Length: 146
View 1 (cartoon, rainbow, N blue to C red):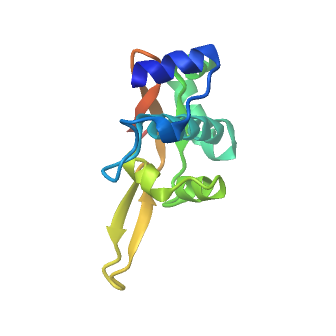
View 2: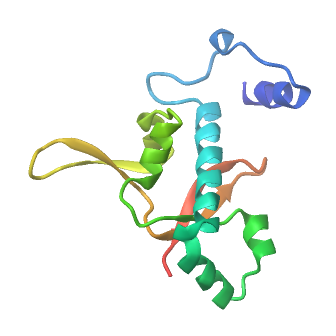
């Protein structure tokens, strides 16, 4: 199924997702959904690095001798220190929080005082490294503190 989807995408053909089997189920989202959310998150982390929030991270990279070319080539980004910056940005794009959790981008935690469940960003104040597969798809992220 994955090979069919890849070939269809290359050929510019849209596959009717309702007719497919092997996609997302009650057990979890499809690989296509995870690929989409990881591509979005990668671009968002890159925007954060390029913006005002990423100033200290850019300074760190420069001090380590990492060129802007390398930053772009490897798709480095930055996760701001906020507990919910990525979650809020995803909500504005109408990305399902369950999909963010399945991708490992947010974590569910229970507030000890109220007992309410809440989502918090999995990565905070981290230089972000996309982890890619052999097809150059972002399949996850690694984060590094300064």
